[in-house]
Every structure is written in structure tokens, then in C-alpha cells.
Image 1 (cartoon, one colour):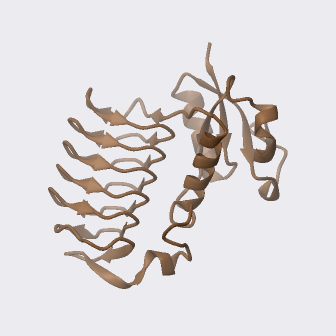
Image 2 (cartoon, rainbow, N blue to C red):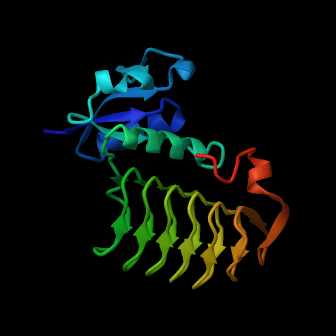
Length: 227
């Protein structure tokens, strides 16, 4: 019997998550939950959209598992907040790994993460909780992607790297071997980062990548400590 899954969210990413879970996993999506102020429709794909505020009544945590399908809105803070809120309510979370991804046998992947097709995740790499790896990324051997990160597509994370929490890696970005990126970093599309920066909350652009003067906290209007 398929496991009963409820998706948190009802936007484009929630639609994509529904498609992938439905046709490439053993989960059965039974509904969507959204904060009541953001509900626009009553149904999606014939499944009910109900208020997140009523989730314990409609979908008790002993019977349903969740996936939080929210993008990098407010620099990953919205997805992080909703994930942690539901976790505090006692829910367990699904992780999706595409059948068309290459994931080596000793890779560790956390909960509420989403691994799209054509990702290559090599020997002893680790992916944290609440991460999204869009299609076609390369995660090198023994590299670590910390919690709440968003990798777009075709990024190359070389071996022995460490990508800090809440970070964003843009399309075609390249991270060299042994590079550690602090929490809350934004690596822009096509940027090439070959040395480990030291200051969190920076935006890196260019080849070789250099930090912009504006921080991610200013750009996305979020606080460093914001949940």
C-alpha cells in the first residue's frame, strides 16, 4: 500500500512535487495544506487544499507524512519556517530521490529533501534536511550540503566541499575542491568559487567569484536569525 503523503504548499513547486511523487515513488499524495491567508483554490489535481492551521485535525501525524514544497522564497526562510513548524507538531517527512539520479550506495540524504533527475551524488557525500537539488548537478566525493540549501541546475560541487546552511547555488556555478562556503551564501549563476570565503551572508559573482557589497540579508530583506 502506498504511503499517504500531504504536500505543504500549492504553487508551482508543489505541482511538480505532486507529479514526481505520484509517478516516481511509492507515496500517494492525498492533499495539500497552505496557510489560510494564501489559499486561492479548494482543490489541486482533484485533491483538497486545506488550511495548514487545521493540519492536526485533517491529517494527524501518526497517519500521514509530509513534504514541504516551497522554493527559495525569502532566501529559503519560508521553506525552513514551514518545515520546522510541522516538525515541531510531530510530523515525519518524505524525501524524493529521482529514479534517474545517480546516488552512490553510501551517500546520506536527510528528510524533506528533493533530488531531481540527472543529479550525480558521489562516494560518501552528504545532503542535509530540507534541501532541493534541481536537475543535473554534480556533488563530488565526501562533499556536504548542509540543511535548507537550494541548488539550481548544472552546478558542480567538487570533492571535499562543505556548503553552509541556507545557501543558494546558481545555474552552472562551480565550486572547487576543498572549498567551504559559510552559511547563508549566494553563489550566482556561472560563478566560479575556488577559495573558501570566511564571511556569511555574502553574494558571490564572477570568475573567479568575488563578494558583492550588498549582503543577502539586505537583498532579500531577511534577518540573519530569522526562522
